[in-house]
Image 1 (cartoon, rainbow, N blue to C red):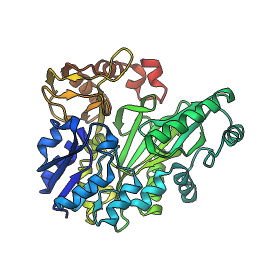
Image 2 (cartoon, rainbow, N blue to C red):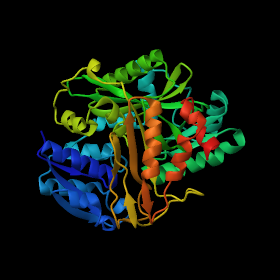
Image 3 (spheres, rainbow, N blue to C red):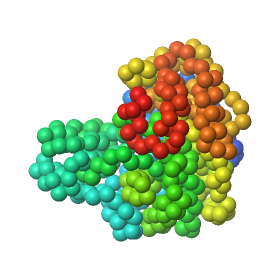
Image 4 (cartoon, helix red, strand yellow):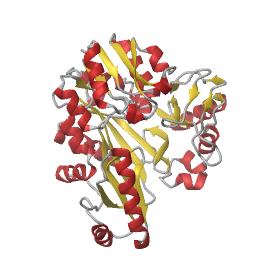
Length: 442
């Protein structure tokens, strides 16, 4: 087992990893930017070092500085969290070259599954269903040709994309070229890779993902599934585990597809396979080779500390439990509390003047917030995740309504009221909602 881990991230996920390490008796090293000098993860870690200015390119994405620091402090491993460098194969290679363990699947697997068009090909070879799609689009003419072949509507995707960036839906040919240019530009600025491809856009679908855990001996365990269909501009807002209105037969097939895919690529540690579901049919969308923001709801249901086992499997420890040991008799819901204006959803900033976190049995708030904390404009707007768990889905909804009503954050605009709307929405309460629900509720 590792004795010291550097966390190459910030905010809620850095705090989450530090807590897991403390419970495991592992020393932690935090990195931070000038803007984060007063951040909670800086105070919680055993050691903390400033690595640059407030912009992510100057700090949290500075691979050479992070590697050099890890070597200097004697960190045996780096946990990348989510976002930032978590799915960057170059970073993974640099870690490998310097004999530092990256707590993830390794550069080769990360590169294969991180490039979405290659991941599609692997899914097809494994027998996992996919939607019709193109090769990498080399030109406007190629985009036009593929769109005619696939049929509108189509969706343009950056092959290295994530977090809802580098994606555009195109419904008719007149929109195609401007969207093509926009996606390439956004992909270049966000991921330093402007390669994009095209898929058939499926409407009125559910976005369901399967959480896997794999060890170095090739053992793959499915920890559960999550419905992530409540999205605004491709950004997830609410997640629940398990996905409602999913037949046992479809769930069984999805679990097998996710497990087969992981075994095909020799996956190790924690990963997520994402699917689009329409009726009893499902289609592979992508694989996230990292910890997901929404891992918390799965933890609440299955009773497994996902971050702890991500670290353990990366260190070469075998998974001691089997598939039949995983519990599925509870229901959990997560609401992402974001710093944004409640009217037009613009990101907000400010000082936390008053913070009250709800409590009770199976109520959890994963966050790096504290009284007087300054929310700056430099990073993602998510302030924390409010998670509840109950014996039934109805019970989880009631518990979430209670927790939201108790949650108080003064000084920074946030989306608590938006989540209250969803908890009272008939479509959400029934569970038969899809990715278009935000257009109806907001």
